[in-house]
Image 1 (cartoon, rainbow, N blue to C red):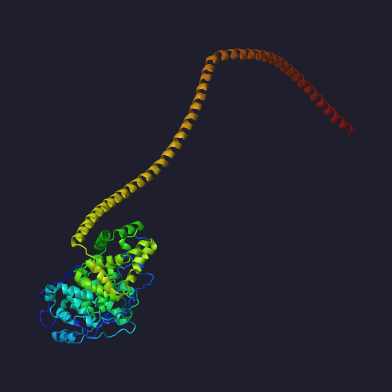
Image 2: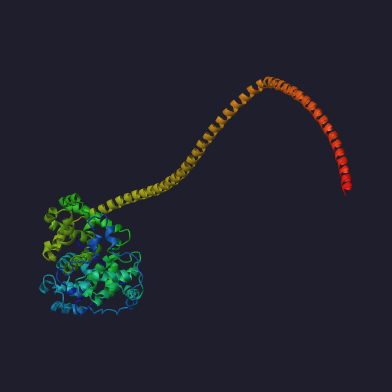
Amino acid sequence: MTIVPSPPPPPEHQEQDSIETGVRIDAKPKHGCTTPSVRSQSSYSDDKSWDDAQSTTTESIETFDNNNNRATEAPRDEHQTAAPRRRNRGLTITQKSVVSQEAAPPPVEQENKDAEVHHDPGGHDNIDWEFWSKVVSDFGSVTKSEKKMLSVQIQRGVPSSLRGMIWQLFANSKNPSLEEKYLKLINEDSVYEKAITRDLPRTFPNHAYFQSKEGQEALFNVVKAYSLYDPDVGYCQGISFIAGPLLLNMPEEEAFCVLVQLMQRYELRGHFTPQLDLLHQRLYQFDGILHDHLPHVHRHFEYQGIRSSMYASQWFLTLFAYRYPLEFVYRIYDIFLVEGIQSIYSFGLALIQKNQATILSLEFDLLVNYLKNDMLDAYLDNASDLIRDAYMIKVSPKRFNRLAKEYRIEAARAHSEAEAIETLKKQNKALSETIRSLENSLTEISKEHAHIANELIESKMDIARVNDENDALRQQSQDLKKALLTLPNEIETRMKEEMEILVTKNAALVQRNSALEDQMAYMENMVAEIKAKYDESEQDRQGIRQRLDELKKLVD
């Protein structure tokens, strides 16, 4: 790797041109200077850990982002809104204090009783205090005239007591106005406060400082402030892992300024934007470089279906801070702040190269677990060996640029294809709706057709019935016509017969009538005779009565 140190800050922010550098450091090292045990944060057992977010069955880094709590949240509880006190910004490094450091290197004080003391790389006797004092007092000159020496010293490791200040020099982050803005931002409300609070116990879960109220408050403030400073990025849990090592080496406001530089100048911001385009590009470049340097490992990954997003995404998202011990992370930050993002590729390739024998012997499930959790074991907690191996890996910047260009071409093609697919999906959806509408219309038409068919059948049956009736009536009409043709003769014959019968009957009746008339005349005569006899009898009776009366008189 080639050292490309950060240029000195612009005149408006350049504070190290005078004897005082303007960069402050605490009188004793921050919490990060008393580094915990090498495996202090290597275990992460939370149910919602990033291991779940990087499931081995996923094929896109977006699955990693889904569990990074990008959802907007309501403002945090009232007891969290109080602004924290400003952290002690420590002493200002002057030329005099640097000279005193040359004479007697400062001891590392242990602030965390649960952590092991972290000694400077190679011991105090191996630290070139004169060189580091020169870096502090005249950083711009050193980066121009002593690049090779600076590279060698960085590979040996930045002194723990100076690390926070040196990091700020590398990042060119000193910005009083941004620090003042930070102090304002921590008093504002962020929609991500609940998400940040929820993730705090899961960030460096085995580090005492970040499980304490003070550490969680500091981490909360820095991450919340950045979510307000860069609303397009907002909050992801990976930002907390990037900010953690900074807070262990410098006050909150200075850590915030370095974080802003990491996100913008070092282009980490593109790892956390919603589309993750830059992170996808990084992983694409890593795959290409892996193919160049370790083709047999690359073939094995392809055969096993291993994608870089399954294991390498956390390297780029957290600068190895998510899983690796802080002793390694500090050394990686030392180099990253000078080399830039290419150093992450070198560290990743070094790890894979060191473990290639084991990697080639494992299959999918065990391989993914090994890539994410166990590769650092090969270095036996020796960060210097990892750095040495990383510096032995040479990657041409042209190759990086060519891979980036290839990715952009493929991404543009994929984007065009995605747009075409999306257009086809919309057309397909519209056609599906049309088909559904036509099917509904066809169903209605089918129902109407069935109804009309039934009506037609009934109509045909009615027509058949009417035809039958017409035939019957036609036959009856023909019969009537025939009957009408024969009816006059029949009537005449029948009339003659009936007349003859009537004549005969009439003659009989005339005879009978004559007989009855004769009989009537006889009876009339007989009645007349009877009347006459009756009159005679009445006369006789009256005569008899008179004689009877006379006799009675005579008798009397």
